[in-house]
Image 1 (cartoon, one colour):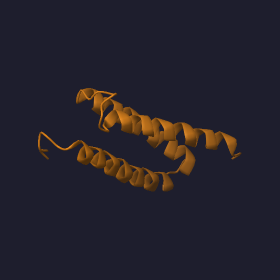
Image 2 (image 1 turned 180 degrees about the vertical axis):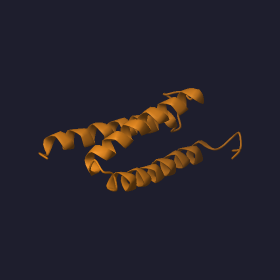
Image 3 (image 1 turned 30 degrees about the horizontal axis):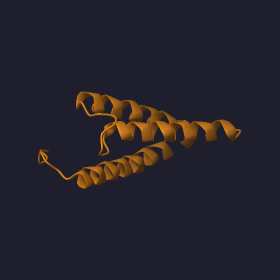
Image 4 (image 1 turned 90 degrees about the horizontal axis):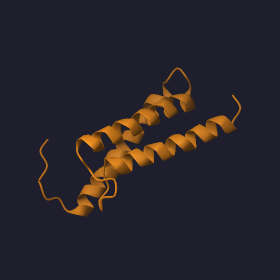
Length: 94
């Protein structure tokens, strides 16, 4: 799907936020039906999403310190959620 070359910065950031929200919905749905349990499945899916977002950001040559949101910001958000879910998994006895 081709995008116009000069999108306004606000529109691009909104698209990234919408993409992140949709992916989180899909990830939590897949984690809910995982055989390893919700927490362990979500940790694995968040880790894979962080790596995938970083790879896509590198291939698209996006700047990690860009003014608008991009795949690097998504990777950081997935990594932060990964750390949070991992901390809660270790805090709650199985």
